[in-house]
Length: 313
Image (cartoon, rainbow, N blue to C red; front, side, top):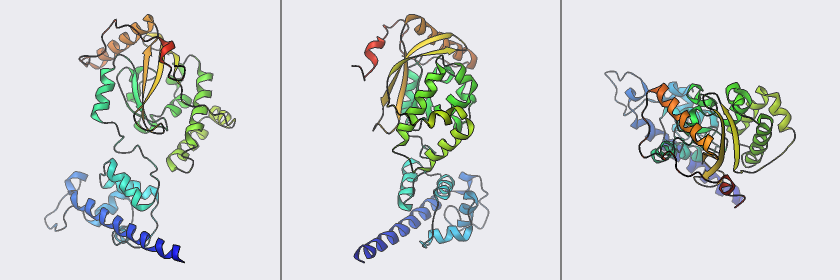
């Protein structure tokens, strides 16, 4: 009974904290920020409750109860809608889900964790292909060379920029991988190993269901229950613009090993170095962009692929 008594006040405190947080976020947003007309008789600071409900596609009464700290259940999907309607940044979104005691179904939403400094690092690495991925293999950011390495990523919808999805469903991506069967098997094993820490999370379960529905190949490999950890290795790609590229794949972790990482591809030979330089030149010519200043200079000695793998050092 003592345990029950101690739990009840904590739950009530959370509800009131959640109510106050939602109200404060609602009151700071102007109608113009979300495409609404202010009108002449607006007395409410920020948005009205019915406007938040409309933007979130939830009932007005239900949202009012939420701000009144009523004892109601809130699904992760509804919290996701509220976070988007209230224009929450990454910290605020995390706080919202923590107060509600729910798991974020789209932890990469809104703020991806890619700071301007990281984006600048990606640009400065050109012509070497590089991107930032999370543990679920969502591609959060990439430089121009990586954007054309396997497919035209700019043409892929943001919600589909996931290495697992692309490897099993995007024909252009698949055609660019020389050892496609080996790549598919390794990626399925890596995904299973990574998912072990996220089995109950909606975003992971949704991605798994999507992969199983879209690719019988993935389903067959997933049924094997093979697992493999992160590794650095030389990969061979058949780029549609410049031909074969032999690149050393390296993961540079930006935080805990279950978090985001910077993925870089360093040419392992002179032909590949010239190839990535031609690839960047082609991209710049097609887009009319300028090359980044102070990028890695042409002709710089290459990293020996035998020394790159941290696992073998």
